[in-house]
Image 1 (cartoon, rainbow, N blue to C red):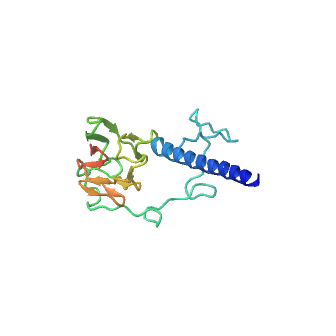
Image 2: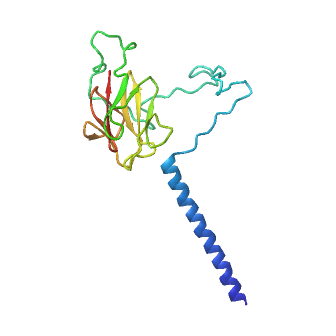
Image 3: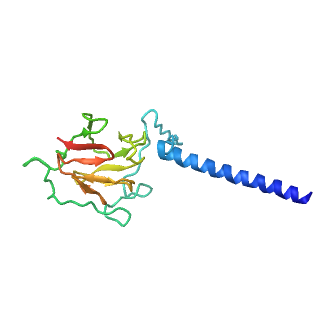
Length: 196
């Protein structure tokens, strides 16, 4: 009798462990395919309402209670690599503060060929996630694959530890790297360029 009870308990424990494993695999697949859930911003006691577009005033960077300044080139974020002189992509005689290197992204090959996106000053994430600024859905693109960002008014590409890599003019990008105008950037099966 006790042997049958022990066998029944072992079967139940084995089934529980098996189901936990199955749920873990399903969760990992879901987060890889669809990205992490977007958390809604909560309103605070000061009455800031993200839905209404009204936010409470925040102290300036570095002020007591304000956000800490972020310095590029710290051990957490390597300094961007540039093989071009500063301002090389700007028209000559133009002020650095008034002209950006590029103002649009043009997809030159892949499923979304011909698509153009406007570039502002904010970083743009590229990947399969619906939260990305440029969504590329193919088997060779990671959920959060790469990021475009401005550094000293020059556009940089940063690979976000993607599986298949990000390529700038045929060379794999390992650190944030400056993007010359009209230079192909390949992510998965999609190639795009930055243009004025």
